[in-house]
Length: 190
Image (cartoon, rainbow, N blue to C red; front, side, top):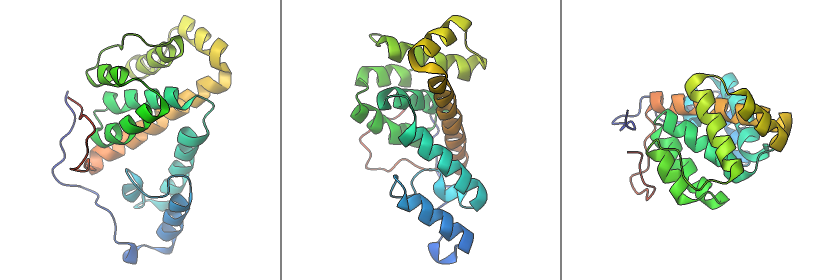
């Protein structure tokens, strides 16, 4: 399966002049937070403001407050983006992953659905956990034990939360057909 090539946004940005008071409150909450804007799924989610408010809080935690190091968290997000062939998610988090210190070769291998070579032990654990959970809906006991020994139970739950949140994001982006900006220099998913 290749990345989606959206042709028409199904849920384009709503006109702020037409927002309800609830939509305006949620949008202001998102924009005033650490994101500073409403990229990706947020305009689509505004169609259900209560859901948008709740999901954006989960996302704020998963992206900015998780107990996992940023590079490992971004690695997990790239794995979800690739699993769902979510072109916009890949575009947005590819840049963040490299900025956080993930090697470009690791991102490239993920883009091609290969297990990256040369990963650190921590990267390999996060990679294997994310792939197992997304693909088999479980993880082997030995991998669970290694991850718990390294990151604790909080780290495991934070990783699960990040994976789950970005599954929701990826599904929204794909269904809404949120496009990658045409001027993007991020290598697209094959």
